[in-house]
Amino acid sequence: MALDRKQTPNDLNAFWMPFTANRQFKKIPRMFVAAKDMHYTTADGRQVLDGTAGLWCCNAGHCRPKITEAIQKQAAELDYAPAFQMGHPAAFELANRVIEIAPKGIEHVFYTNSGSESVETALKIAIAYHRARGEGTRTRLIGRERGYHGVNFGGISVGGIVNNRKFFGTLLAGVDHLPHTHLPAQNAFTRGQPEHGANLADDLERIVALHGAETIAAVIVEPMAGSTGVLMPPKGYLEKLRAITSKHGILLIFDEVITGFGRLGSAFAAQHYGVVPDMMTTAKGLTNGVIPMGAVLTSAAVHDAFMQGPEHMIELFHGYTYSGNPIASAAGIATLETYKEEGLFERAAELAPYWEDALHSLKGLPHVIDIRNSGLIGAVELEPIAGEPTKRAFAAFLAAYDKGILIRTTGDIIAMSPPLIISKGQIDELIGTLGDVLKTLA
Image (tube, rainbow, N blue to C red; front, side, top):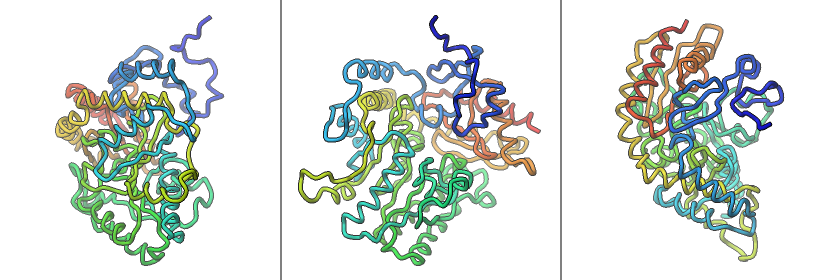
């Protein structure tokens, strides 16, 4: 008998779910069995409006025909090809198309399989870059408090989300952190970039003085911090980081796993904010979340530092079995074509003011202590229940699901990042339903 995938499995025990309250979920499962465009279908047949683009990744919506067809065709033609000492056309074509929309000065693509792997790769490239240039003392990495850079050891070392770090030992040595930029007393209910906080970038000079520039390989930040609760860069902040890193010969890495591919209305946050780093980490929207794939984008200077010595020698001893996987590459090409043909980056920019006004209409509702936004991304911060952090936002998440919208919570912050195909009517539905939920919270 064929398996009916629409039925909830009898036994949920075997799957240890990531970033999930497993015991709570398995008592009352929330199962999606299908998706199309802006909606998921639940196991009991309800339609749920996707307010999070899956997990910040389905920027073009769900089950888009061009992407689906590209995957099917590629799987039937060339399912796998090794990326070590061999190649296939789709990986090179996708890299060319990514560079076409990347900031000027970014010229090369190194494939990974996820945002976490992209971060690990960028950190390794940064250290190896300095060694290749004869500055092997530059091994120190600088992250930021409240930063999220995936879940591998390098990523949680430079990251600054406490629960992602504290259970896993001493992590990488030689890592330091900039202060976070969340200043609610000064910047609450800001629309776009906040006015206050650019001076926080100056702390990098203190770190340089403490450790010595000759020991520091790279600084990594999210240009707009997503998973920690949607924190916008203060005006002038990223520009200061760029100036200080350039002054001291330190590489600047932007983690664009969330902000890449249209989320803020430009192809990348680097273009949106007008600051170009030396490397960018990407994933998620690269393939519309359909097939795991990530990529590190680098400047010519970073790449060319490795292109020395005998031509038959491997320049960088790093890579993955699935780097530039044929099916993922086909999905990526079709995804970029979908973005371009439907003008989705431009659409995000055009919808951003409407989104902003809708989001800020929630000001004054019970427990709302801050709202912030940029592009098609936004956050509603709730006052925590005394002694029970995260409980209020989690209650909002459950109530929202019951009412037919998908939101995401991090701590007591509700984060939303809908697919770029969302309509104004669907924005009204998403924000209106969330408003109804907030009015009922204890």
